[in-house]
Amino acid sequence: MKVSFKYPCGIIVQCQTTKFKGITTSRLQMINGCIQYCVQPQCAKNKTDVVPDSLFLDEQYLSPVKTKIGGPQVVDFKFKLGDKVRNTLSNMVGIVRYCIQDQNGCIRYDAIGGMVKDTGKPLLIRGFEQEYEKVSDGINKSEELKADKEYLAIPRKATGGPSRRSSMYNRD
Image (cartoon, rainbow, N blue to C red; front, side, top):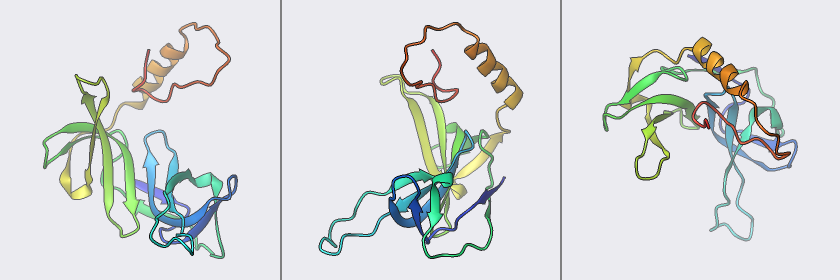
């Protein structure tokens, strides 16, 4: 799966909304199509022993600082978002939900498995590209869209608050 990223890793970018500025250390594409960059700010001059927290920011909010970018950066991921994969080290099976490329060129995947019985939360499987093998092709988009339409057709009372429904994993 080829993904076109707007910015390379290792450049200074700034969020147009919050003015948060730092160096892009990794970039990822989520299963919903959103592309984000991990932005690491520099240490304060008088506190070089304290590393500030990095943030993942959406691509459309970022702009380069004093850098000219020579076109989109294309990364060829081995697995597509939604593919069913097996981690060969743990033998755990899951669906790819993030494709991540770090500044050093390493490619990682974040897959989601079944639910953990004790907590009721989804099982997260993380690892490098070399640790995975494909089990089957990605989820069927037409079936997913049909399921979304059926879900959205259920009448609900408007609460006036923000919606927390994020994806196929969070259903009533």
